[in-house]
Amino acid sequence: MANQTTEITPVLTTNDNHVSPAKTALKVVLGAMTVSEEGSEGARIHEVKDICDVLDVLQKHGHNEIDTARVYGASEELLGQAKWQKKGIIMDTKLNPRRMSYSHNKEDLKRGLEDSLKALQTDQIDCWYLHTPDRNTSYTETLEAVNELYKAGHFKRFGVRNYAAWEVALIYRAVEPELFACLRGGGMLTGKYQQDTIVHEPGSRYDPKRFQGKSFRGWY
Image 1 (cartoon, rainbow, N blue to C red):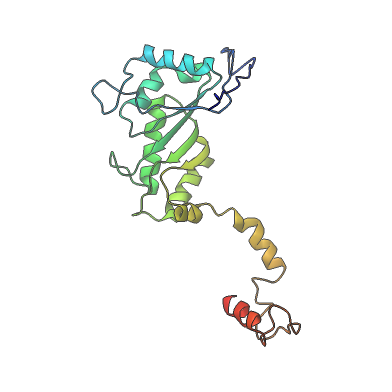
Image 2: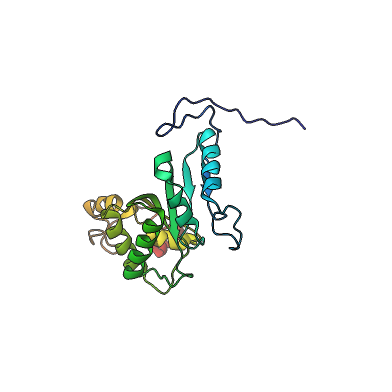
């Protein structure tokens, strides 16, 4: 079997004063679950100096993004002490409704994000994730609260983790502003077209006298 190699593309600059001699072909986001106080579950990096060393290695390979979470023990606090902003790091974090007495209602979302920002010693992060679903709180309430926090400038991007496809479909409604307006403009959603008032061309796929037409009319 032939060996496979990944080409390393040189780059000249990254954020601030950190210069990257080479950047890997794939984007890398460093997960900070193993950054926490000694004795915590899964923690392997406990000292601020060691965290800074890891960040330096990450940036030497041309990457700048860190992913942490409120539920990762003291991860946010230690990263805050590492002064990640001065290094030009892009910071993401997550809020888990199953731990630490948070839910995804309006009050807890605000409290959880404020706790993360305080721990990270910042007023804004890049991406804020809902770590897992809170099925005891309506998505309408959750997303309205998320939108308010976004408008307040606390984060630049929003994401979800560990959500089922049908839950993402409930949340991500980008089809509605443009497509629905187009359909209304054409009368598709206004009652302009009714099955019983439309004359269909004989032999067409919606001809009620044909098997195919009966099937299509039954479906739609």
